[in-house]
Length: 150
Length: 150
Image 1 (cartoon, rainbow over the protein chains, first blue to last red):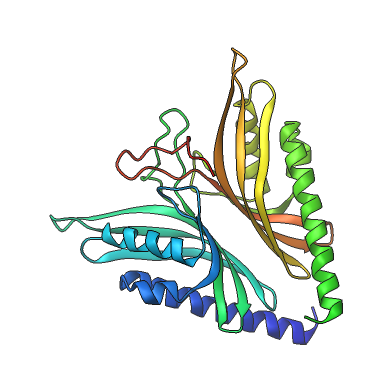
Image 2 (cartoon, rainbow over the protein chains, first blue to last red):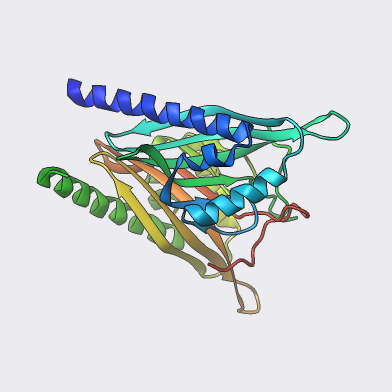
C-alpha cells in the first residue's frame, strides 16, 4: 500500500472509531438527538426487534425513541471485539455488544448481541449508513438465545 | 469523484456482485466447497442460529455443513433489495434474504431474513470477510419473527 494511502486509511479508521465512541456515549446517555446525529439521512437499519428493516432516518428515529422507553435505570451498553476496515471514504465494522440494564431489585440483566455497521464519509463527516443488530435463535424452539457468552 | 476513481468503484461493484451471484448459486446447489471458496481465511460470521459468532474459515465451514444438513428438497434462497457500496479494495452490502425449502407434502416454507456482508479484494480476488444473518425477535415472547414481509 502506498504511504499516502496507508495514512488516509489510518486517519479514516481513527475518525470512524471516534464516531463509534460518540454513538456509544449517546446511547448510554439515552440522548436521541446525539444518537441520530450519527446516522446518514438514508440509513437502512436491521434492528434486533420488531421489524425486518427501518428505511430512512425518520423511521429509525421513531424506533430508537421506542427502544429508549424500554430502558429503565442505568444502561449497560459496551462494544467488545471491535473490528474496523476502512478505505478513504467507506468503512465497515463489526463487534459484539453487551446490552442490558438494572432491574427494580438492582440486579444487572445483560445479554451479548452482535452488531455490524457500514459508514460513509460525507460533507458532514462520517455517518452510519447501515446497521445490523441481532441475537441468534435456537433452531428447535425459535427462541432468541440471550445467555450466550463470547 | 475523479473519473479513474469512479471507474475503479464501478469495476469493484461489478466484481462484488459477481461474487454474490457465485455465492448464492453455491448455496442453492448445497455445494460446500463452492460456498467456502467465497470466504476469506479469517472470516468472522454472525449467523442466525446456534452461536454468537464463528471465527475463521474452518469453524464456519463446519457450521455451513451443519446448515446444509437442515435443507431437505429444493432450496429457496433469494437476495432482494441488495445494496452494495464499494471502494477500490473494500466493499459492504446488505439485503433481505428469502430462505426456505419444500416440506414432505410439497409445500414451500420460507421466511424473510436480513443479511449484511463486508468484502476485501485479495490476491485471490474479492472474498467475504464478514457476514451477518438474522431474524428479528418479538420483545415479549423472545421468539424469532418468521412471518414478517418486506
